[in-house]
Amino acid sequence: MKYTSMIKNNNKRFWQPNRGLKSEFTTPYEFILLQEASIVFTVLHTAFVVYSHHYFKYCKISALALLKMVMHARSGGNLEVMGLMLGKVDGETMIIMDSFALPVEGTETRVNAQAAAYEYMAAYIENAKQVGRLENAIGWYHSHPGYGCWLSGIDVSTQMLNQQFQEPFVAVVIDPTRTISAGKVNLGAFRTYPKGYKPPDEGPSEYQTIPLNKIEDFGVHCKQYYALEVSYFKSSLDRKLLELLWNKYWVNTLSSSSLLTNADYTTGQVFDLSEKLEQAEAQLGRGSFMLGLDTHDRKSEDKLAKATRDSCKTTIEAIHGLMSQVIKDKLFNQVNTSSN
Image (cartoon, helix red, strand yellow):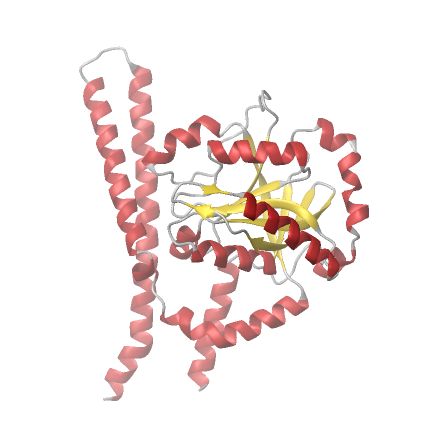
């Protein structure tokens, strides 16, 4: 019992920070709950939102909303899922308090909301107000299983319409596959620029692996939106509930293996990497017969550099999975062997 309790507590300390749930938070959850939606949403009528294309810079997500979104995204498997988020605004920060799933038709590349989904959305928000949840709809979320957190062309169009008629509104993208593979939440919050607006040149953003069949869609629309800085918070009640959940499910977490859970994803990553290397090799081969094409050579070298980073990411995730299996083998199987 002594060793079991020690393993459970140590594993819990490892698990919680990797999912981004802070024990201390800058804006107390209880204070956020006391804020009245009618007061907070007066920011809609200020000149900042109307004239500043980069007004909202931060996004705070409650532990409740995060868990519901990640579990919903994970339940969809390789299909995209979609949901709505409820919350408030506080200055330049968008605060997501809760979320709920929408009955939509999902495919491996997009989600399609039908009339039933819009009726469900309106009924849910109305019923939530009747039980004392006064938060308004503040955004929508959907999943990108296995190909990162960014906005596609359809996502950009959807978010532009939402910002035009439902401000303030934020788009959240979750990658449940990479969340399981990397051991931490893979999530991004985005807002779009108005149509025709050219954002100022910014420094290079954090690199993320994009599959070869998604690169074109990613590159065409990447300048039409910007990312918000995301943080998470939880209340004392949330902390107690997470303690109870952890006491019930920590064995499942310890016995699971990311290598087995994400075997198809890892295979797809290796296959995608081989295609990128073949493409870069073909471009380098064509460039060797042509003189004076430095730009062409630089593009090929850039693709090789990105392929190298992608291979490092895949290798590190595989090594982490192997290390966890080796550690568990040493902890449990070797003890039984030595006692015999």
